Image 1 (cartoon, one colour):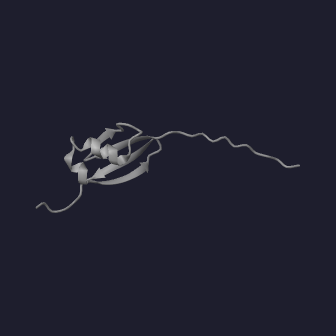
Image 2 (cartoon, rainbow, N blue to C red; image 1 turned 90 degrees about the vertical axis):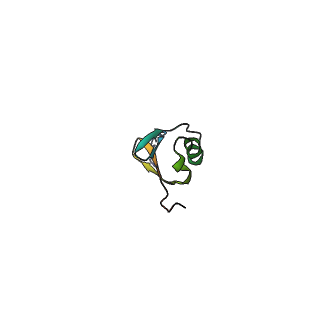
Image 3 (spheres, rainbow, N blue to C red; image 1 turned 120 degrees about the horizontal axis):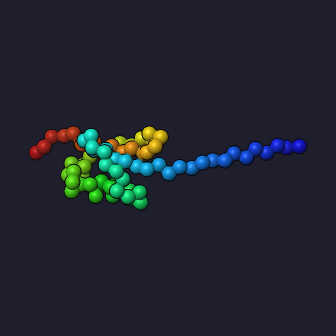
Length: 75
């Protein structure tokens, strides 16, 4: 006689948060892509337009993305 085991899986939707220059920025809209979030934040933080994106980092509660300024010479 075969025994079957049923396992219940619990799914949790993780919220996103963004960081730039030490500032925590709540997710402006979960339906937005990371690039759309970048475009939305560019007027407030112009350097984000050329920043690199790190992440997502799963902290257990949220998915964390970090915008890092591009390092380079002006001119």
